[in-house]
Length: 166
Image (cartoon, rainbow, N blue to C red; front, side, top):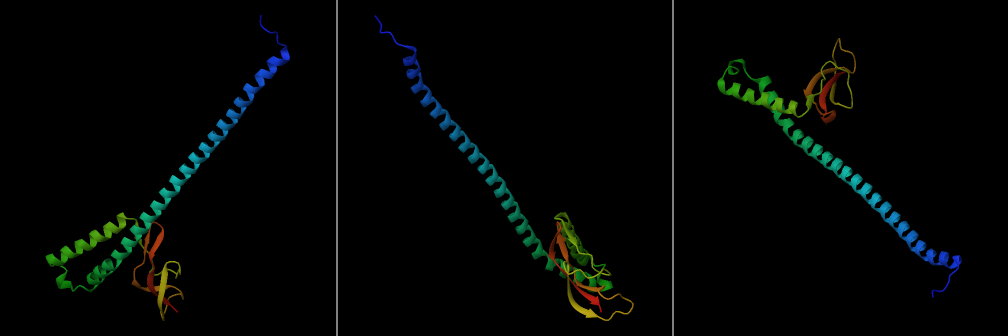
C-alpha cells in the first residue's frame, strides 16, 4: 500500500521545481539582455570605425590634392607668360593639354576654384597679402588674385592670396 499524502505535501514537492525554473528564466533573461547590449555595442563600433575610415580617406585625399596645387599654379603661370609665337608650337600645345587634364582631374575630385576677383574680402577663404590703392574700387574689394584658392567638397584646401582695395 502506498502511503497516503495530504494535498499540502504535493504543493511542497512542486515548489522546489518552480524555484530553479524561475532562477533559470531570470538567468536566461539576463544573458539575453547582455547579448543584446553587446550586439548593439558592436553595431555602434562598426559605424564609428566606418566613419573614422571615411574621415581618414578624406584627409588623405585632401592632402594629395593640396600637393598637386603648386603644379597647377606653375602650369597657369607658364600659360599666362607664354609668348604668342610659342602658343602655336605643338610641344607647347601638348603641355597645355596636360594642364587641362590636371584641371579636369581636380574637378572630378570635387575641387573648385575660389572665386575672388571683384568680390568682397572673406577671411574664411582669402588671405590678404597687400592692401593697395584702387581708384573706383570699394574698400575691401579684391582687386588682384596673386594665387588661386581651392575648395574640395565644401572644405577649404587653400585660401586665395589676394590684394584688396584700401
